Amino acid sequence: MSKIDTGRITLTESSFDFHDLLQSLKEMLMLKAQKQDLELLFELVDDLPKIIKTDEGKLRQILINILGNAVKFNSRGKVTLLVSKDG
Image 1 (tube, one colour):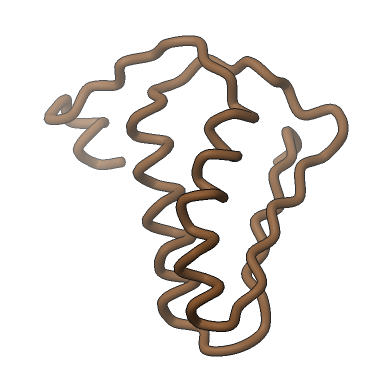
Image 2 (tube, rainbow, N blue to C red):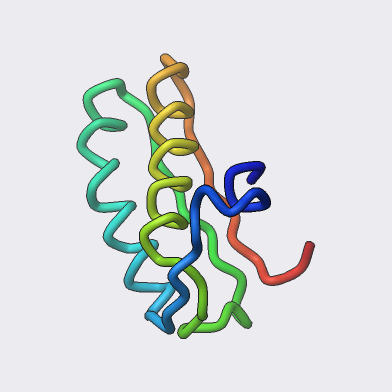
């Protein structure tokens, strides 16, 4: 965030299908989770917008980092990503 605030990184906003992004991340991380005998759950609220406008690449990288670490540092149970539009 500090790099964005200081202008060292810029955001490239575009509109894209958020549900497709989440599905592709789930498919990508599912094999890694299964190898560690973890359940990987993505819970999306019903009123989640399908199309959003933000920097898709940066959002993808953030979610990969968070979920990748959650899978990497858990040895049993499940990893759940709850996605809602409310804070």
